[in-house]
Image 1 (cartoon, one colour):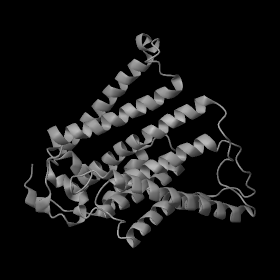
Image 2 (cartoon, rainbow, N blue to C red):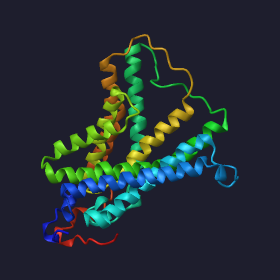
Image 3 (cartoon, rainbow, N blue to C red):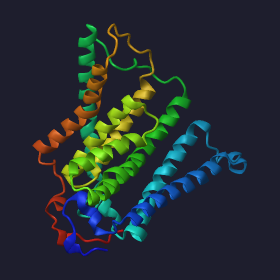
Image 4 (cartoon, rainbow, N blue to C red):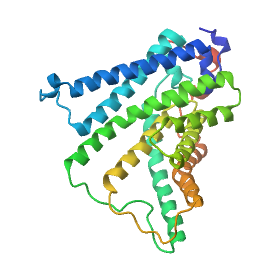
Length: 313
């Protein structure tokens, strides 16, 4: 481990606390992926094995298996980074979370609480824009319909429980370890954040190119939150609430799409990306700037390199 007096007080520079050579980077990626594949395969075997499948205690309905596998993957990713920090990177695991080596659950809840009203305002702005384009009041998503079957509700409830773990795993990888590691090789923060945003969008292979634009903008916003706060929890909370809102939209807004009289253009999609992806996070950032971080932990801002104590995990 490198001496403490060489540590950076910035969250983005905490990779300097441990190993940063290419072998350590490669081994970290291999370890995290190996654990993810191993634990997911074990979970899949348990889920479909006749021995367990016939037992009522272990019976996992088909609709719920995806949720179980996602939870297993998130747990494996988080565990992989903990093990990598301990055995490969030789740095405290909590240096992936904050400069003062702590995890503050209240900052996660604050991030979620700030994102929710900001997202509502973003949706209202979207409705206003598309209504002006169509010449009549238009909501840019499906009409509200109450779910008719339990096979729609139960998996969604399970996903709502899993979402915080998935968001934590993604933020640990992209906004923490990957951002800090790339910064060791590229000194420009803007280039680092932009590169991480592109990789974040590429990681979500289920989306098409237009939806990946939304992922890029969201990643830029999450990076801005983590770098402003010098810790990861606000980004975890905002990321979790963004996915919660998307899950609830899929569950409750299943009616027919509104009929637009004006065909959608590339300008409409770019506006959608700005209003849905950028606006909520920009409003969050503005509120935090105006309120001085809203009781942000001062340790992360005032700790000098010599005061950083590696060792919690």
